[in-house]
Amino acid sequence: LASGLSLKSNTVVHGGKGIKKPFTEVIKANIGDAHAMGQRPITFLRQVVALCTYPNLLDSPSFPEDAKKRARRILQGCGGNSLGSYTASQGINCIREDVASYIERRDGGVPADPDNIYLTTGASDGISAILKILISGDGKSRTGVMIPIPQYPLYSAAISELDAIQVNYYLDEENCWALNVNELRRALNEAKAYCNPKVLCIINPGNPTGQVQSRKCIEDVIHFAWEEKLFLLADEVYQDNVYSEGCQFHSFKKILYEMGPEYYNNVELASFHSTSKGYMGECGYRGGYMEVINLHPEIKGQLVKLLSVRLCPPVSGQAAMDIVVNPPVPGEESYAQFIKEKESVLNNLAKKAKLTEDMFNKIPGVHCNPLQGAMYAFPRIFIPSKAIEEAKAHKMAPDMFYCMKLLEETGICVVPGSGFGQREGTYHFRMTILPPVEKLKILLEKVKDFHIKFLEKYA
Image (cartoon, rainbow, N blue to C red; front, top):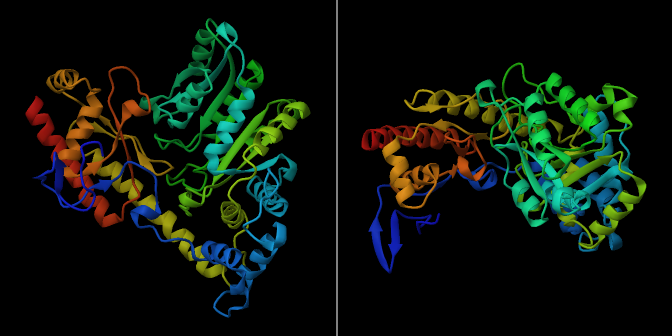
């Protein structure tokens, strides 16, 4: 919102003077913040967190017994039976046990050890912590971290902050943003000339690209990591967000286990999940977890020591994470309402994913791959050479120039593809599909009208 646009009006303030703009509100389609875009909280999750926060409510007949049961269990795991106490650095024991049980259910019985579970401040905290542990060296021995392009900018920022080397591998846009092992091999071999590539990051389902990796692709990646002795980071925060028919979420942990002991006992893997995405959209609680397997005991000790510096993750976020992994089950009184709310959110997102893809592909000069999962579209946009020249004159990336024009003329805020990385000569933007259906239709129509006028102006 760098242009100084007011969120509540169509007046822009420059030097104390209001300039009228041709829209009545700014639509923030730039960030995956579900509740800010109008999604309703899941009742059961909020009930349990409310009970944990204010235990006097445990005597209230307004709350269901299954919510009270979970709240009592969480409070018993807290010092002084209060969310206001510090917890163990790894998180409350009973919640880590619930996370391990959830992983076992999700992965069809693959064992999970609570001692390998670390509760985190959102998934971001876990990703940053594990990178801190893995990064070392200088000169040609500096750690190289392989990340997908386009990528979620947390990775490039953390790599830069920790003075490691970013090693880009490109997702295949022509093949629905698939991950190709030949491209991983190319990136790795080139990087060996100037750093020591040790870490491979995967985002599945993809952000910003929305692809869902196939089982075969995951097997190939695991084999590659095993072969090259790479530490795997599997960012799986969108695991509940899969929409396309024929697509299915497969966890890296499950596939690793099914590939046999040679892989399962040797490949180092950290997987991440969060309360912020899925059907919950509870970004503000900053709840998350990571499961780390095959970490050397001494390194594990250092990880616990590192995590203890920040004392513990937010305890209300830990409670919210518990409900994600320990929701109502058939036979409990809250089950029917929980399932209804969960399916409503996910069905709505699936509908919006298809609507967005279809409407973008009707616009001349725009191409959008199927939105198989996550909660974003990352369409490719054609920008005429005249507009590219004008962007250069303004010292802006062409897609940044496009996105600023879109914001100033329509009030729609999206993120240029250059913020995520893209192949040279291609231009994109990322837009969330979270707005309510009717608002999303209006938004997409506005983008269509803007794009056609943009092409006419700069053709």
